[in-house]
Image (cartoon, rainbow over the protein chains, first blue to last red):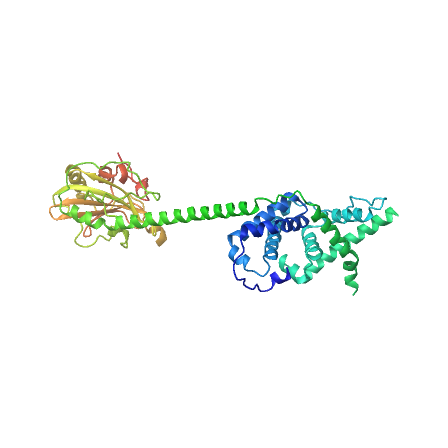
Length: 177
Length: 263
């Protein structure tokens, strides 16, 4: 991903679009799913990104990392949805834990579910920043570029999300104890 | 660093949670993505092509239209010969283009010129020297041409052909008029409002060729019949002889103050 954000080095020839999509669609869809938290939105975002990529495939395929390039398009598609449906977003006051730790040794899985559920309650930009940071492993500068904000703002998004998650998990942990 | 603590503490958990969720998504639609992308791109390009083609066709039609209207002086010359003075009334209700302008009858030789000098004249009173009608001349026919004078949207609004009898009646009615009609109001207005939005050119067939009278009835500068050498006031008697069909205006600054100008 980092390489894609750097200057792209030309390849010797363009990739075949169909073959490339077949190979990368799974990774793109999974990324879109953790980004959007919704299967339909994920599929739509990937389809929109692939349509854009198809229209300019020669350029995209010559990038150093076409997958990162298209993931960036997915993020942009998702951001555009935010803008389009911003009024429809319902603000959530505090993250709510919807899954509880199982008492039978499946604690790790339960905690994973709980973190996922808590991520779903984050505001969209915070969630996107968290996904880009911890799923894609991007730097704050790269996140800021993708989310069209300053690096400090990207850092703020992630830290606020972490603070909210930590508070909720600590509270729930105390209640479980 | 203290600010990295939350990341170090929660980061691995979040990464694991996101990874687990991503790995669990096996029902996402993975087939047909490339095909659908190509279909959408093709559709977009088709839409763009259609739009571009529409623009090209529109421009081409405009160009052909300009070429066609640019050839009208030939038709005027034909009219000048006086050979088309047969008394007949031109068909009314002809099709107009999108801007409400009427295509000239280029082929018949009796068309009103689409690029008539009145469209570029400083005003409907500025009849070019040598083209005005001497009202003592015998006329054998008349073509009435109604033009829109709005800057940037000038053009022919309508045209009607009249017999020798009607043409002579028009001339006779004008010939007895005073220089101005004192019953018409006098306006004070801005130079922009003074310009008429339309005017009529009466093209008479004479032994010397086509001779004209320009008729001004809109704006607030002046009104009347202009031959270039003489000015006659605007009265209803001659107007109602030719303000019919395509050359009957919906109104005008002075027409609105004049009664009985249409039949």
